[in-house]
Amino acid sequence: MRIAIASGKGGTGKTSISVLLAKYLSFESGQEVDFLDCDCEAPNGHIFFQVHLTPLKTVNIFTPKVDTSKCTFCGKCSEICRFNAITVLGNKVAMTFPELCHGCYGCFRVCESGAIKEDPRRIGKVYAGRHEDGATRIHLVQGVLRIGEAMSPPLIKAVLEEGEASSNLVAVTDCPPGTSCPVVTSIKGADLVVIVAESSPFGLHDAAILTKVVRRLGLTFAIVANKVLDENTLIHEWCAKEGYRYLGGIPFSPDFSMEYARGGDIFKAAKRMPEIEEVLCRITKMVQER
Amino acid sequence: MSDNKNGPREIVILSGKGGTGKTTITASLATMMDKIVMADCDVDASNLYMLLSPKVMREQDFFMGVRPEISRQECTQCLVCVDVCAFGAINGESLEIDPVECEGCGVCAWFCPQNAIELVENRCGKWFSSETRFGPLVYAELFPGEENSGKLVFAIKEEARRLAEERAASHILVDGPPGIACPVISSISGADHALLVAEPTLSGLSDLERVLDVCHHFHIKASCIINRADLFPEVTREIRRLLDEKNCTFLGELPFEKGVMDANQRLVPFVEAYPKATLTRRLEKIAARLAVL
Ligand code: SF4
Ligand code: SF4
Ligand code: SF4
Ligand code: SF4
Image 1: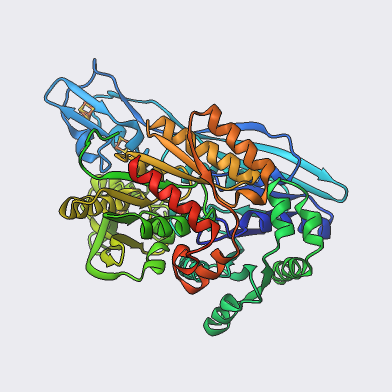
Image 2 (image 1 turned 30 degrees about the horizontal axis):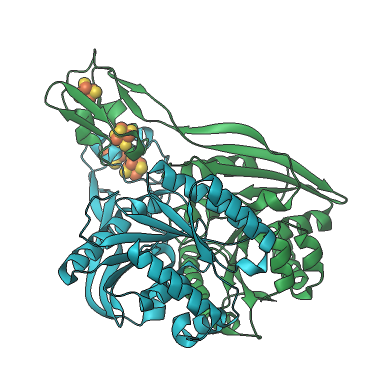
């Protein structure tokens, strides 16, 4: 059972809700819950669980290296590469641009002289740790993208694989923000996607695009309005109009923002907000329904 | 990075993560700077146009990469394509191609002994060239779930640069994407300056550090403003320390202002909705400093 928490843009409170949900689910079930931080460009979930993270593995992708003593400069490799990551100039030089390489092995397969060797490119690292606090136990897995690296999906996949290998029954995924490829990789295969929408015209615009992505993948989803100001009903009305499942609205709270800011006890702050508990409770019900 | 002393200066506004007020600040700065061209490179969540009510002058389809299509008539089900696909995107039984896993590398088509696989160009979004009261704005719409490889970012910037030249603009203001990966790297490539909008939260601090490292990695000069600095002075101080340590110019602190949310609800740039607010005066100063950067 994997619940993905996503939002069309950053800063909607996606991480807070992921963290609170993981803890809530663990408390309710009395079991350890996986927290998979797929927001590898800005991983922050660990700030809220006092957890000691240890490196689990380095994630690499294939990039080619040309052995010039074997190369006949036939140019096939550069012909097959659709990403301009390998070029053959005249009959002397074969150049590679590893940062453009997608690791498709095309050059490797097409080279008849065995001149292409693997030169792995490190894209990031996966870390893991355990958090225990009274009745709640969290197994946190986090991907951290290497600075300068352009592609996060292979790292996201590595984080999700750790979740699959874990014996815990429930996993919460904190997804990267946005509506493109990294989000798609993170929500694919999730049993439930919770879309966190900021209660503003921007929030609505971005949540509407994300909803299209989720629907196209055929996933079950529900929507939470967050940072609701002055009982604004923008998101609720939109859900009602479209017939989307609405999980409730969480008001903007300076008190909660403060705890979040200092990486403090957002669990305690959440207890003072009945709307949060209501949302978490509804998500849990949806999980049990399935 | 550019040595072009007379051409327009390109300033990319970045935040490491969303929700720090980047777009609000970009829109407000745009209203206060002369001779600018704007580019919204946050193509996943392009919000800038919503604040500037642009008139679209030109609309263009954006193609990126290819999508393989298997012709059932020609296919003999030899499964070569399944074997050579490094991404496991082709189902071994149905031969259906999973668009999420497919990288568009074309290796399947190359090795198909029957030539049964055609590579079709992939239309993945649109970009718009528009006019606003404050100058031209180029923005885009990526179709939901498409790969945001940075190529669309390049296309947007190219159009913005063309317009800047045409209008003899002095600055290009680029609203950058969140994160640190491909779209960010493309948005800072060739830029003269990165303006980082930090948020005084521990998450914000860690995101800022990562985006600063990216700027450093690509040799882009950066300066930083701290938004909603008064909300959590303790972390604001830590951010200042980090900026010192990383040699990043500190451009000022902006106060929390509830009117920002109100202005965004009404889709008006903050400084127009609240011309007398402290935040407006601070932004004016920052706009003035940016103009001479
Ligand atoms: S395909 Fe092999 S032999 Fe031909 S140019 Fe490339 S590396 Fe050299
Ligand atoms: S692995 Fe694929 S993308 Fe990388 S250089 Fe070879 S052909 Fe190009
Ligand atoms: S390689 Fe070509 S012929 Fe073989 S299964 Fe794939 S599409 Fe069909
Ligand atoms: S284009 Fe590349 S990734 Fe897509 S199905 Fe063919 S071999 Fe696989």
